[in-house]
Length: 153
Image 1 (tube, rainbow, N blue to C red):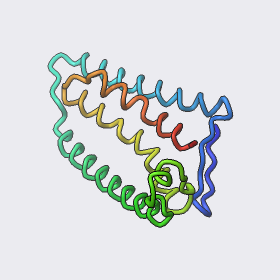
Image 2: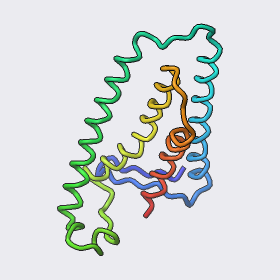
Image 3: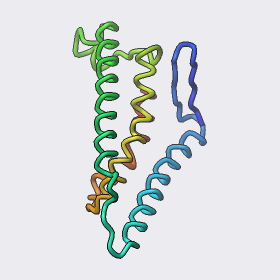
């Protein structure tokens, strides 16, 4: 599928030179669509639906965990681009690439897969009986693919 991961250096890349790579990202969008619509149908099929009792605790754990992982990624990426001297000029900020390996590579890979983790936000809205607006729906359906595409540049 175009994903290359070297676990010795934690270098990785995801090129879109193969049709399988494009298909994999399309499949991710379709998987999101299917899971959201299935959950919507399930909730709608229940006559007197009420959110499960465990939902609030799971949402709290999810939000705290995702926040801590996001903080970790921010610290690693910010430190890495500082050490790589990318903050010295507007040109360096816009044009210089930091090698996608080591801690920076791990943080970038975690960032990519955190986009799938964030699908839970939509599931929580549905399980809470709330409406999912199109912007939220479209955003979560496409961010994994957009993150994968941007790592090619």
